[in-house]
Image 1: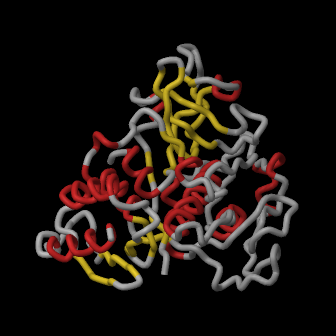
Image 2: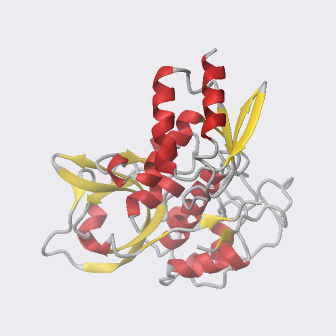
Length: 328
């Protein structure tokens, strides 16, 4: 009975919700075994205010589903999306961890081990693209992308500094296949050189291969993931997933073990480094960003680190990039 009342109400409200919207451009389909009606949402804020009353009074969030861009979501999920789009005040700017927001996307917390070489750009960019691919496909694509192919086939010499936009150009032009860690057959092209020995002298061992040598049953040509054409850092992560950040790495960073990192006043600049930003929080009264590094699980907090947030520590809030995967 409650569902019938709700659906009848929606029918009367449909003119009110029929204008074009900038926040949700797609048609929203309410589906029920006895009722299907297409509505265009005119204003996400107005819509979520209506939904809030019904969510709290009438049904469980599993009762009615919507479909946006082919993805099935509950009404409660739509409300959460509306809240994040409409009101900055509803974003929890104190705590967030992408691993908990998307717990089934196994790549988000994946830690690699490139020690102190210049491969961090490759690990951060392929990692963030894999994360966003998982999120955008609602976890249908949930695997590591091949750092090996990026290093071997992009034409960039990763023995030296390579900016992240060079990797993004490769993703757009060529795409990147699935991958895996060293000494595995996971994905199309897993790592071929032990990461712990990934020093400039070994760069020549990375040879561009045009076939799958890991899982040989994968079709190389059809396995590539590409990016589409590309703020607020927190809103970007909440909407699309982890981003890539570059920061000024100082010598005391190598000895980081735990806590919120802040460079020492007498530390020496070593180089620009890259990492994957997956969340934020507060520890002992200090705001921090949470990042996945590529120095192995033994370094830092199981391969992750926290760095002071809000003060552009080591320029970490100055250089932030993210790409949207091209899902067809």
